[in-house]
Amino acid sequence: MPTYEQFIEKLLTFRLVYVLPPLLLLALIHFAIWYASLVPTWLDPEEFKPLKLKKKEWLNHNTVLLRFQLPKPDQRLGLPIGQHISFLAKDADGKDVYRSYTPISSDKMLGRVDFVIKTYPQVVRTSMRDRMGTRLENPLTQGKMSQAIVKLKEGESMLMKGPKGRLTYQLNMKKHIGMLAGGSGITPMYQIACAILDDPKDRTEVSLIFGNLTEADILLRKELEALAAAHPNQFKVQLSSPIQHLAETFLCSE
Ligand SMILES: Cc1cc2nc3c(=O)[nH]c(=O)nc-3n(C[C@H](O)[C@H](O)[C@H](O)COP(=O)(O)OP(=O)(O)OC[C@H]3O[C@@H](n4cnc5c(N)ncnc54)[C@H](O)[C@@H]3O)c2cc1C
Image: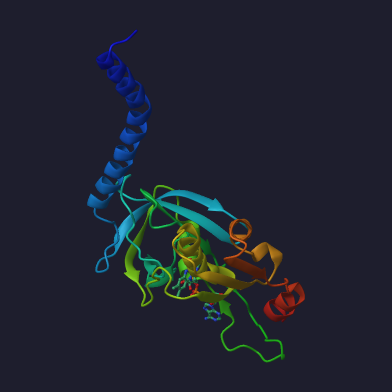
């Protein structure tokens, strides 16, 4: 028969075995969050800085996923929800070209940032008419930044500056948000929708209508459908029917 002291000691040891590991884990998580908040974010609103391309993957015929590596693995980009970043590159004539882009990765992501960017080919057309048959003034088709992005190789850098933009999304700032996006214009919508659906405290409902020329042009389709399936009462997405015939007549007619 154990004594009273032995019994208490046994009880304490037994409980500690179960209680201590989760407590330690919790403390570790809190420490990691606190430590990450000490690391300064990467973006600078005043100065363009180079960021190294870690991965480049073509998602379809004209759209590329670019994954850039932040200098420190425990660093955040520092982009408020609803804002975007400015890229700076040289065009084919060596002139500076500035364009805006919205990451598809969350700002909670440590050590990297992902963009989905649609590229426009450099094609010179000798003549081009609109749907009414009127000759267009300037039939030159050129994606200036697109061409710099197409040429950018893994290990090379892109100059970036930010945050930019007037809108900063705040938790529950609206009851219901209606979004209307076309083509690569989906990225700012995706950023806000993800932030809302990722936060259990955010009760905002989101309805998105997303138009595209053809089915092959629908960016982030799997991701959007997965979000809609996971949050059926909060997020509704309507993909527009592809309008192949219109795209062909409007863009390619002589
Ligand atoms: C806030 C914001 C966020 C954005 N986020 C993204 C994003 O995440 N992903 C993304 O892909 N895009 C995004 N964009 C769009 C992006 O900024 C660029 O506009 C896009 O990448 C095209 O740039 P470009 O230099 O390649 O093409 P540009 O050279 O600007 O050409 C754009 C279009 O105009 C046509 N064109 C150009 N010159 C002529 C001419 N002389 N005559 C007739 N047609 C012409 C081109 O063929 C092409 O179709 C965003 C824009 C904003 C404002």
